[in-house]
Length: 72
Image (cartoon, rainbow, N blue to C red; front, side, top):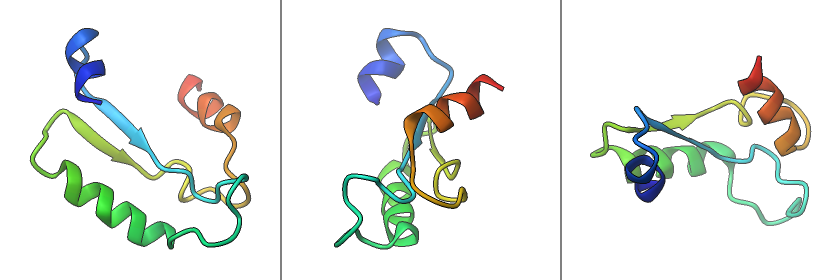
């Protein structure tokens, strides 16, 4: 994320975690735990944002749905 932010002169980088990864239905760490770890990891970086867009959506996470969300 740091390289994308720097290279493209972005205001911020949103990091999206898969809510329910379709390729890993078993053995995935709870989404709220993963989100808390992400928030802790980026806490010192004002230009990074943790997105809940896939975490709050029901059902499997598909990138196409996330892209539609951001396009809208």
